[in-house]
Image 1: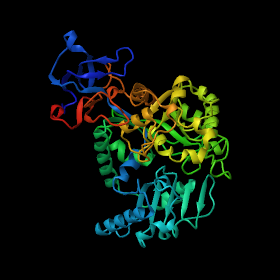
Image 2 (image 1 turned 180 degrees about the vertical axis):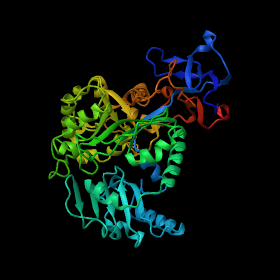
Image 3 (image 1 turned 90 degrees about the horizontal axis):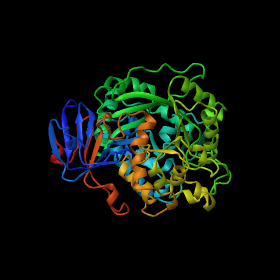
Image 4 (image 1 turned 30 degrees about the vertical axis):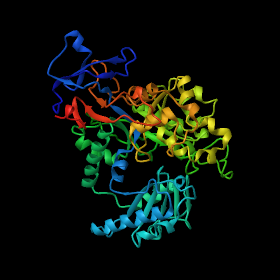
Length: 515
């Protein structure tokens, strides 16, 4: 099964196709990287090898509709601060990583950390003093949402701390938020070498395969698209439909985009940010934050300049999908106004949609809401403080969105949270937060709807060839040890036994499916 041109049939399987016309089957035949037949054994269609799955569950390979593949890949070699429950633990990890850099002979390298969340220690955000164990080495630690960071004294001495539109700087604490973090801190950090980026991409691809992920919608800068993805576009082994993050271009002079594509790589859109995040209190809200009544968050970029709809139309004229980050309910309303002022195709994408006023939910009928269930599980620990009890009904309204005809496409936003889609399904189905406590369970949805959001809907939104097991579609499949429809998601998860992309087994945890 290592040859994409091979033909084989998976039999004795519990197949869920994600195809409403034929949702269940017992066999799948694959030929030349595509689905040749569903239940073809019953119709005399059988060629090549027969693989008995012994009653295992088969479905479309998972699709992560929104992640940052290059950024996630980079974190595989950075200081992981996620789950730090105390300042002491935070500082211990910084010191340990600093020693590792010294041992590797990287005396001049910045120490880059990621994943901290003040909810983990139920206190305030860290300050530059928390990074003192990095010594004289410049150090930066990114909050898990990547919308704010803290730097140490050595890094602060190299940074411009003058005011910036759409950003906030607390120099005394070493904290940079939004545009200040992105346009002041990021450019100062030495970029990884091209060889390191390519090696990290290979590691990230293998990691995602172990999670049953066969395709992603990735947010990428043009430099990485040109230098990392295009040279590897025919051999990625992971389908990447990219959305371009470069946003500093005049509306009448869009950037020149590469035209190369392959079955594994294509540019499908461009992105803008309407606001920030709930955790950083920079999501733009209709009313001030419950725990910070002096602020209602920030409008950003094209929305701040009053040109969001014009930007979206400019993207659509390129034949591409405009993708807009909007988390606060005020940003959501402004974005929906822009949707109404634009064409329906190429379909715009509403990224995150974390808080929505009840009046705005029906406006998403027939539109794509690209959401991340694990963000709900994470932000649930901060939402009561940020929103107050009266606005919890606006928080991740999965069920109401489905009831009004929205098309949910699920992803992770990795490295913001884990890219494991099974953890995302659990969050969407149970309403459990990252501490295992139920929260806003009235918004929980069925296993079927969660799986559809990680497969068929995500494929439709991104124009991917998989997402459904139907004759002629791409042979992208995941094999689980048991049916996700027949277990208690509060207590257990199914296990990924194999991932198949274009008819090739790219991950196998069981000898039955190894080449």
